[in-house]
Image (cartoon, rainbow, N blue to C red; front, top):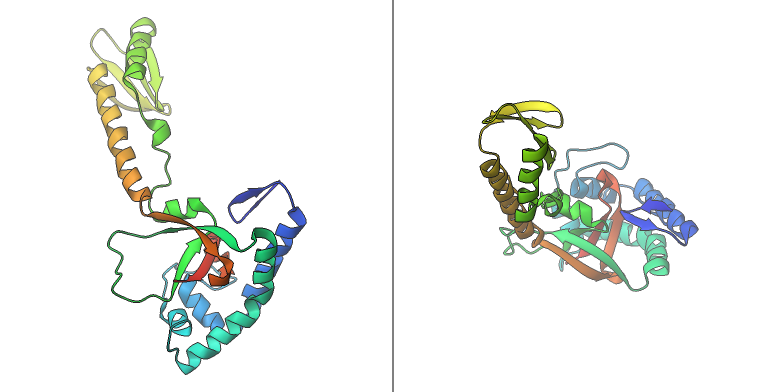
Length: 239
C-alpha cells in the first residue's frame, strides 16, 4: 500500500507510481513562459517552496475566450506537455476524476475566472477551509458528563478530552492538560458543561466551513494541468 495524491491505493501500484513520475516530469520540464505562469498560479517553483500566494491572471488569460499572444503560447505549451499526464489519468480514472475545492462565501463571482484550482485530497480542501481538526470526535454528551462526575466522586480524578481533573479537597480540584497544570476549579459539573458547549459551537462552526467544500466528478477533458507543488495535489481545471 502506498499513499499517492492523498488517496490510499491498494492495487495497480505500478500505474500510480508511473503517474507520479509523469506528473513530475511534465512539471519539471515545462519551459517559460508557461513555467513562470505555473509558478505564479501555485505560488511556488517546481523545486523550491514559495510563499503560496497565487497570481492567477496569466493562466486565466491563456484559457480565456480571447487570450493574449503570450497566453496563446502558454496554452500551447501546457496542452502539449500535458498529453502523457492526461493519458495516464484516463487510464487510471476513466473519463472523470473525483476532485474537491474550498470556496469562501465572499468569493467574488463577478470576476470571470477561466480556470480554478481543485485537489484530489479532500484534506487539503479542509485545510483551506480551516476545518482540519476533528471536532466531531470531541463532542461531549450529557451521558459522558454524568459518567465523568461519577468517576470523579469515586476516584477523586477523571480525564475527559485530554483534560484531567484531580481532587485537591472537598471543594477544589486541579486541572491538567496533557499532564501540564492549568488552574484550579470548584464547579466540575459547570466546567464540563462549558467544555461541552465549547465543542458544540466549534463543531457547528466547522460544519458551516465544510459547507464551502465542493466535491465534483471532474471530466478529465476539463483538467489542464496537475502538480503536487506545495504538497496540495493540485488540479487546474477549466471553470
